[in-house]
Length: 308
Image 1 (cartoon, rainbow, N blue to C red):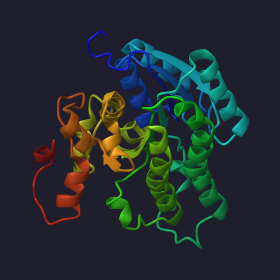
Image 2 (cartoon, rainbow, N blue to C red; image 1 turned 180 degrees about the horizontal axis):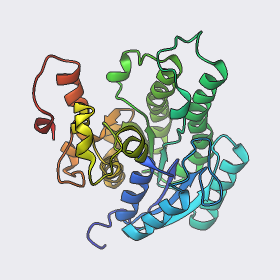
Image 3 (spheres, helix red, strand yellow; image 1 turned 180 degrees about the vertical axis):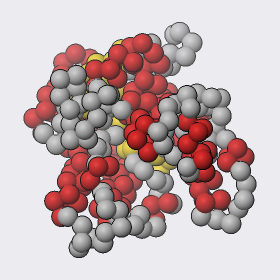
Image 4 (tube, rainbow, N blue to C red; image 1 turned 30 degrees about the vertical axis):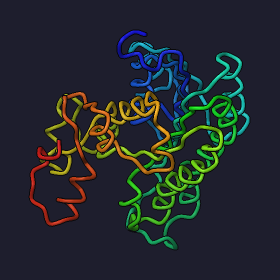
């Protein structure tokens, strides 16, 4: 096997891979040699309700291939059961296996404003749409994809969320967002019990402070190359990480023959970097959740560089 191609011959589905963490995970799985089916609603001819035409599912697939894997774009709305069923049937027909399922579907950031509104003051349709995008999509995808994943022992399900089990134990100050981001942790916990009977593993995984495309160009008005300029606006941005970091976390989990030791757990990219020895693109290992715990929410005064 070519060095660095630990996932050669493996097949992955990254559901919700148009941009951000999803794109980062798809590309890093490809860099490790996997065939990666990537899905999303924004294509070169159609833009989802998120409203960003600058990132497409086709571009993600091309980046996967350029990284050394094989990227296959399948435009999919994961709320449409027929589309998800057809997606899984295509993977089965073309590859006959599924080794890694990453549930990263979200697309609800535009719905949660005003952030300070109490549940009964918040628009109910917007709130329920958030839950459909962040919870129902994961359930629909797992329902159709897990029969293929469990065909062989060793399959891995990764539920992507925002926050660890520890951080999500406290209320997130937004009723619908709180539910949407805690649900994947419970999904991983429950499905871990069901999947272990098939010799497969389920985990929940969160990035730290993610430098997604939206975070860079909309919130901080910077690029990946100039991201440190954003620290002046928010000092916590100093502990941020690129999408490649969580991508490398997923690739490391997928390549670990003892991945079952994590079954049912809530994991984060910073802790996995320490465990598996990978780094971010700048060679650092940002521990965002440690920094938030000790400095932002604690009484520490250590600089962010101490957590990189």
